[in-house]
Image 1 (cartoon, rainbow, N blue to C red):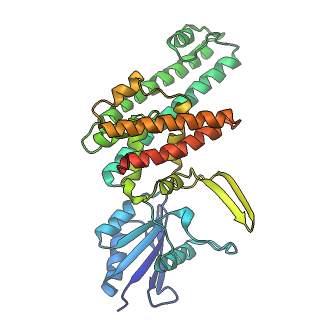
Image 2 (image 1 turned 60 degrees about the vertical axis):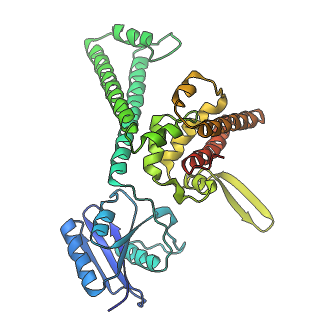
Image 3 (image 1 turned 180 degrees about the vertical axis):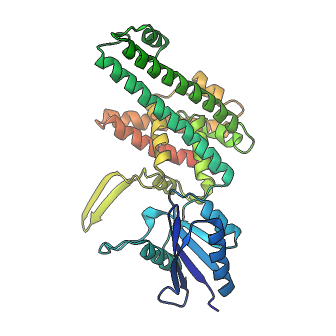
Length: 365
């Protein structure tokens, strides 16, 4: 009986291509396709365990999520969910099939060449999905407003006020009379859709505040909200998507995970540093850059910040103030040096990531 069996899985919504490789074999001992159904997966795993007690498996992170990981774990199989962007690939290999991918995953798993992604708990994953629901609706609202504005431009309607989507602007929209009943009906439908989305977003935002106040999140959320620009949505998103911040041993590792470190291509005596890598979690990177824009100014005594910091330990507040002053100076220094504001905000986001990591691992001396 072989000591270890490595299973590579190429997963899609209907089937799973599998390749089984023993630790003392050069080629796979079994290759095939099974249905992506819990009963079929359990049957396949039990068949492998009957021939070898020590079974490990891997598949690429993707649209199928982590339910396969949880099922394999419940069946007593150690599973690694591989980061797709970090799987080693040969430049000259131009043939791609499901079975070849499964075979390669099994070999890479045996050779310890795969990097796993963080698998959240079911509770954190549910919160993460709810937060992304909120952002999806915000995106829908933005697009709905753009469609309405384009519709009005086609009908020769221009708003002369300073601020769009203020109460005065909305009152102007409701008072419009276009040149035909059908156009007025279209305008009414656009407005109703926008009002409906705004109501959903308001309701979901209240629920997010409620979730953030739960005992398992409240203290961490409050700590992160001590930093300017980090509101409840950003704080809770980082908590549920990162999980344990201690899995990053240094702040630089956390920055690299977010794709905020500069890319580099150096050879010989030539060293070329380029734009940020944009590797890792793009969702958190975007949220962090949004927060970084707030550091064009910083006032530690602002009423809003002081309210959010009530009840926090003095060392946390001191740490957040030190971060605020440093990031504000960095932003202004880069802008006055002629750097585009987008570059300055990205550089601030990189350092802000380090400060957030420090707050979560209590390196706030």
